[in-house]
Length: 150
Image (cartoon, rainbow, N blue to C red; front, side, top):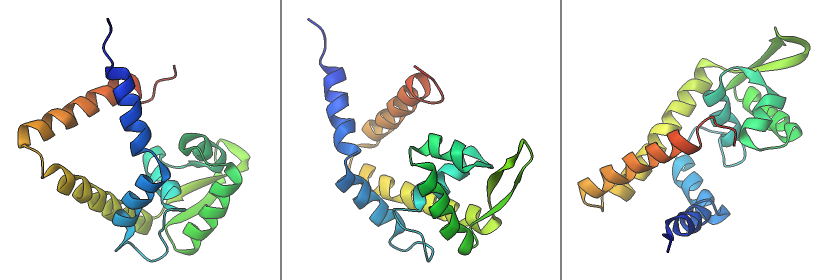
């Protein structure tokens, strides 16, 4: 008979992605964060850091948030000086969103805090187990999730 690894992985990822777990991670990530960053706007800032300059429409597809919500959160991030808007050179009707230097610094600080949160979680594991888990997750994402349409 077949392995139940797929079902176990589905269950584990489902639990990881539940709102209470995301809220807890964001809470730890943003507890000492820059003024104005919270669970609502962080995905926009983080998504923009991942994609590079892009439109609200394209960013909304990347991060899975409605375009109008991305635009509203972009307003707030722009007011905080973390992103700027400019004409999109590829489409005169569109607006391009770009992180400012302050936005890049804020996302760098947030990502370092998230890495620290995960490191503290992994510190309880034997080092070999932690390395194997991370390597397996990196491989899984690279082979099956990162940038692939299936």
